[in-house]
Image (cartoon, rainbow, N blue to C red):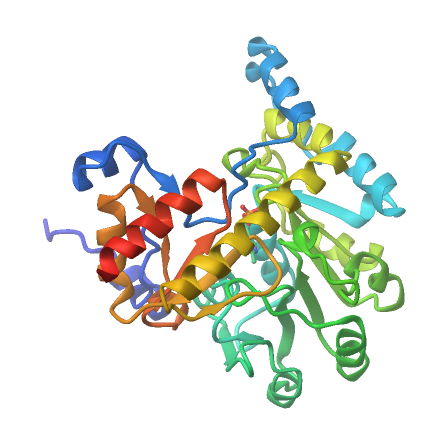
Length: 368
Ligand SMILES: *Cc1c(COP(=O)(O)O)cnc(C)c1O
């Protein structure tokens, strides 16, 4: 028998695609790097955890209910979202993290020969899903660290199906204001779907930030992504959603496999939807953390890039991958930015005072 190799069966775009390498669990990292605890500042998680209401739901979840399939369409959660955003429940689709809804949209609208447009230095999953689906991802370079509207419009052609805007942008923190976003939607003029990934919307404090949820009433080709992973501290349960006009959501719904969102996540998210006090406390932690980092990084002479969101980027005078390993020995995990096409940069989650101090102490040690 000839030895089996899957290569012959694989499309070229899968053969040449590199898999994402996730970080190891804490106990493995502590063994590898010889540290006694790990501050995870690599994934923009909320150090305050989920809102107390959601924590209570988690404590009380009846273990026997694990045997029962969850609601296949997150029935109650969609109703709560509809009420919160003054829409119909059918305008929402809930997924296994916002990551899953990215696939839903691409599967619904794109076929061989189509393309999507996004930035070169942004959340990478739009590009990845497009590429491993055999589609062209047109990456438009950032301009002044933000999405370049004119250049994105210039790259559109009749095969462009989706434009992905990360607003505010992960990792640079820049955002398009209301005027700029409306002008962009006017110029796209319904020729393609515009996705506004608002994973960090709940952190934004600027008052000219556009509310995608209301803009979609005027622009039915607008789709908004939100997640419970960042502000709501439910990253480990994997739950996020999209919202759009009824016709667009109806089309996307055809591509989603029901039961990808577990029952515990649905209940915790339902409790989190109205936790406005949690938003205020988290914003305060982020505000304090940023003020501390601005001061301390300046004292260390390290330039930073920061805007909206619970993260910022720092430029180092040496390689980010080397910095990662050295910071890990001090129990501080950051995101290396070479993979985001920002060599020598790291991205840091704004977290608890304790974690921020550990980071600064570790950086100071490295620079000495
Ligand atoms: C974290 C993040 C997501 C994905 O969130 P999940 O709901 O955890 O899949 C999507 N978009 C951006 C910009 C993010 O930073």
